[in-house]
Length: 197
Image (tube, rainbow, N blue to C red; front, side):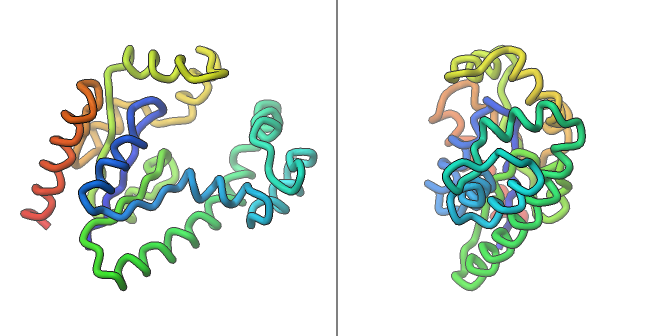
């Protein structure tokens, strides 16, 4: 089984690339989806998040807008939040990998926006970075509802720069030329992995 660490900064096309990998038969672990379930009503992160950031839980679920506002005013808030969320995500990831191994899956994908920042790159066999020119990235992100240049800059400030991610990647998928071009790059990368690993 080959474990692919998939990462990329906001607006680079990581979700689309994860879908392309799934289309090729890879089984994808989506860290964002796991966090969403942890924050949902009944999720394992709800009580600890409320204890750490009072007032951020509404109707039994973590309210992301309130949590974002609380983090904005708290310089060490992200570290406190990561101490709550990262171990829970790690548990879910371990269960996912065990099931994939038992099922004989050839490729699994760890879809992790903060692969390098959370030191998860050492736990994967290869790193695939999704990238696009900065102008394309900004256009994509600023087209999202509620996004502002200031919010984007704050997000990017917490992420490893794209150039550094590309430098540390085993494979780079450029998503600026459309989905079919990206699909061809994904297929070529998987073929190379089959031959080398």
